[in-house]
Image 1 (cartoon, helix red, strand yellow):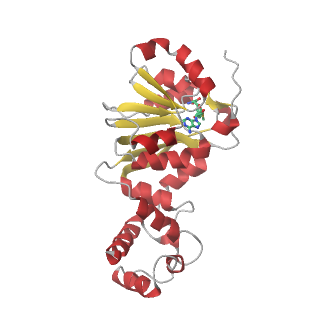
Image 2 (cartoon, protein in one colour):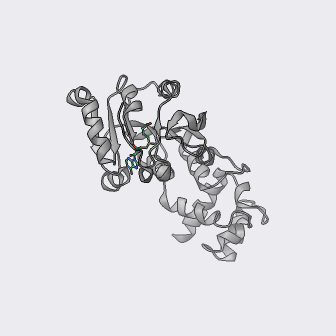
Image 3 (tube, rainbow, N blue to C red):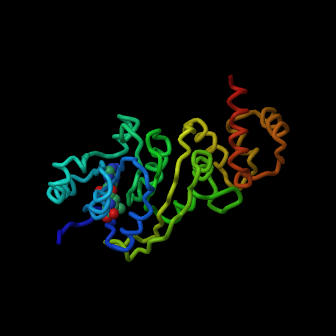
Length: 264
Ligand SMILES: C[S@@+](CC[C@H](N)C(=O)[O-])C[C@H]1O[C@@H](n2cnc3c(N)ncnc32)[C@H](O)[C@@H]1O
């Protein structure tokens, strides 16, 4: 048994429940995609993944890289496992994609940057499936639809960029060492590979939700004149009293197209 003290600053909660580890493996899509893991930690999920697929694992913690190198000597030598010692967000800044060909992201994510990682994976054109353990509340945001309590830019972006997005199952704190303070869930997203992420659209959505309880038209005044808002509302038949969480993702997309066209 390793004596490794989990580091809070890296969001380290190691998954120890073998039933959950098996369930994650069973959730993997049957395809020829390569696998990328973020934050292999002590390698418990990695050990299961490498039985089925070749993979690259990105780990930021120097101490863990040392442990992983000695645990996976054979797999690394045989080229089945590639370990990359870096902050994964920096890797994405440098190379746009975490792998050259199509890949699936499978990970128990560090919760402090989980939202950023999922957004980067949605943006990464090589990533097809995202199967990640995250805080339940955050998973609910990514799968929320119009009129749901958790509906925000995250649910809208995910709905527009994917063919399927759902929570597969919940994982209680006792499954981890140390146990996190929150309930966790496995989030599954199958991306629509014909669609692409638009950063400007994401900014537009954030402005739409800046004051979530106010009228959408009020929030839009930070971006558009009252006349433009009124024109767009008329063209798309939107009620002036509507609140941000009552508008469907497709209507947001249509609104944004009009905003963009107006700017050109
Ligand atoms: C929740 S733990 C999961 C560990 C392991 N996969 C498991 O299931 O037990 C998160 C892992 O992500 C790593 N990590 C944290 N921030 C990271 C970053 N910016 N880039 C890469 N790895 C990171 C941590 O060091 C840790 O190993």
